[in-house]
Image (cartoon, rainbow, N blue to C red; front, side, top):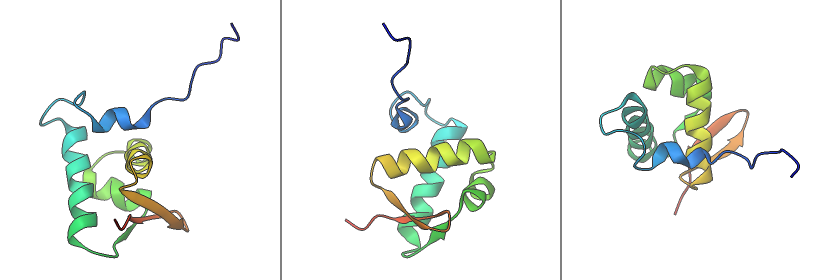
Length: 85
């Protein structure tokens, strides 16, 4: 046994484990709405932090999880954009 752990599953925050009405769930919903209602919107981690009122660390985790789910994609310069279907 090597003692190394598998990488964390960042999408766990986007599943049922987040209690309904929690700050995390509210933040996820807000980010999704921004990306869906403003086609072409480009958000940085700082933008996401301001929109969700979460710190930069949690905002980065949420954007990474949305990227893992192919809801957003990184477009360079630290920006994220809605992934076209």
